[in-house]
Length: 368
Image 1 (spheres, rainbow, N blue to C red):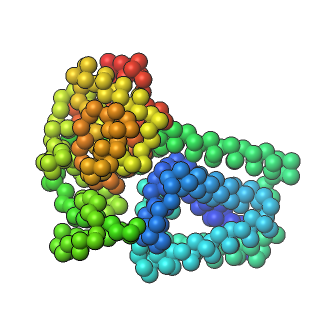
Image 2 (cartoon, helix red, strand yellow):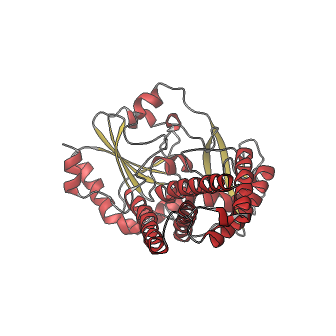
Image 3 (spheres, rainbow, N blue to C red):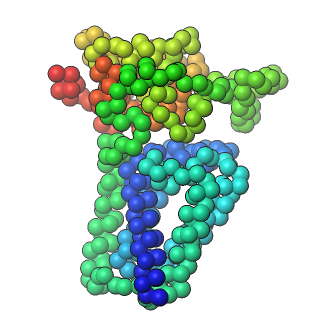
């Protein structure tokens, strides 16, 4: 019985520590997944800043719960909290498995992508293990004395919060997405057939959003057209070959970007309305630098509406033109709002978030 309890306890500890670290490695990825859940289940959005705080708290909670389980800290309380948490998660995944509002739960980010059915099975197993450990919590082995428990608790807090903040500012330390540094987009994209896209036409009325396909009839005149989005057939499982950009006239300019010899900067702004305007001076300085040194510069956005583009120009003084790309693809390329990507002959050389955009002296270092 003691062996069985401790095996279950270590299984729970490993799962929570791993899940917490993955979420801390990519907090913005968790934000995007939370947005998907809200749109699919509740039909409303919350501010990105609030969701980012929730993402960090969730990473901290899971990691801490795993550390407490691993070292046997507060065995009774930890085991009870674990059961409650797993009950909530299991109920959520039952709904997800039945209604299928999102294609994957996002429990382990982009590292391990599970189907909704697989996620439900995983949570049922973990719930059974948590209930078993809670029932026989006294059989858990103590690995630390009470004096050392406080030290472990403090170190785990500093580790997970510090790591999450670092990954927000400097981008994920471990990049498991298809657009990691070193990816040769020129080779991948140009040697593959152009990806097919679904068309989503967005209308709005009285705060409600209506999404239609290209085959649907237009709604009545009381609905206001918002934008047209391209959605890859691959859904959330994007590949590097899905990189696709057009100009404002809907003409494909992907080859123009990827076949450009030398250095090319991509300013990634998925949503012009929600972008961080605090880094605009650096963005404008980078644009001026590229013009002075005859380097490629493209601003990629999913905001196709004239109002959003005019809003961005009026608030930032932007002199560059816009190119269009699918929003999920842009969020996958770089976790930033805005973010900056440096290509060299179609190869991703470096990426920056809106919090650590390079200065002129930094650019000289990379462009030597």
